[in-house]
Image 1: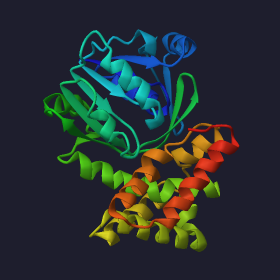
Image 2 (image 1 turned 60 degrees about the vertical axis):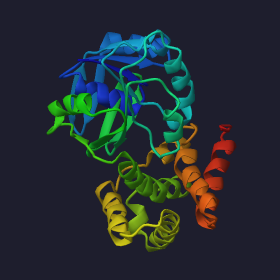
Image 3 (image 1 turned 120 degrees about the vertical axis):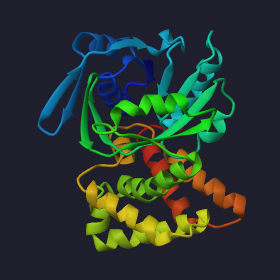
Image 4 (image 1 turned 180 degrees about the horizontal axis):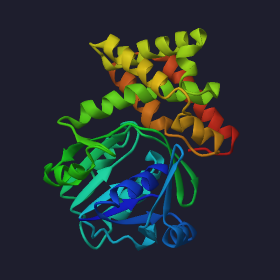
Length: 300
């Protein structure tokens, strides 16, 4: 199977490194320079003290024709609009697209694109791009995927080779799958980004933990969660299991990049408005993160 990966950030590089052991991979980069580095040196995966090199082909995104059996779109949510516009103007209608974005703000956008089968996924791995062709995997997890539109036949075929080393699990309900990830992201990411702390500090510092629980209560209120204790336990467990990790939103702030705050808290604030509910804490953290973006000259 030929697989195209759109986006060569941390997740794109991570996926290319693993799935190239079973499939023919072409990774599409934002710049010609990054494509050159990958073609020349391969993708270097750093996992603890172990290093592996995967030889994959790379091209600039301008060269993407959409002819692969599966295209994995691994760009940030705020970069997605330009990719979707490109998809709708490709000479070939893509057969299968898998979108790996945080939050749920992109779901409405996916209804407007041309493709036979559209899949969505949520990634639990921790990864950090150290250079154009090097990615550091600093947290092991799994990838959950589900059908947004179409059927799951190819998704099952794609996930089968990676059950042990790089588990990709097919879920029955895409909305519930993304909602579970959204709850975790909404509680952890904005707090770590504003406080500039690692995930574990949110449960190890009892003052931070108090804010975390209050923020979760507001998230639960907006989403009308029934199993609140289970969700809170999941958040706490993730903070403990990834204690030394820095959230993707914190890393975006530190690197002077735009964050995915609109896809995460923006989605929840829109949902609160739809229900006529107040969300003062989520609103405060939303504007604090947006303020950090503006402070660094990154305004979305």
